[in-house]
Length: 259
Image (tube, rainbow, N blue to C red):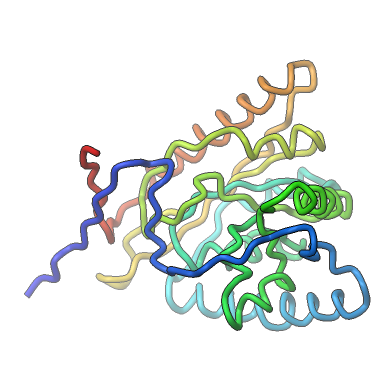
């Protein structure tokens, strides 16, 4: 008997969330330590990021999704500069693993919801993996910006999921705001994007994930800040929309309903 396809009904592309983790997020206030550049912090990062995360990510993605990356050579155009990367948010685990594979050997720091540092066990590890949770007050916001600046100044990649909410196996690009594009405008550094697509592979039930990497896109310093943000957002969005046309397998169907 043919398995019935799962359908998710949604109302709001900008705000609906289907991660299903039901985690009680802790408050990220001024006491949260973003920068972990002491000896213990550096050792913890090296262990969890390079010795644990990267090998497990490669193994899991290759065995489960037969993962392929297309276009990663464009990252060489950034040279020694740090940069920002934007991607579509469609898998709770793959979205955490793929940026490390796309950008290796460069370290990746990911701007995340506080949920990601609030889990009982993993929440203690994710900061060492590069998780930068969004702040909840002004003092934390200051430390957050300092951490993002530090990553870029050290030539690292800062990963952002502008759709904000996870829609599992979604095969289009949801509209997103230009708010997060203020970071590359402020730092005047390159922007790249990755688009994860779900394509038919050897398995009838599990798609192959093919990741496309595009860029660089640069802020236009001759324009006002507001227009720079909008231009970068539009360049990234249109590129990801075009890449999303390569999806060939629908695991979950999404249908919009009236509010």
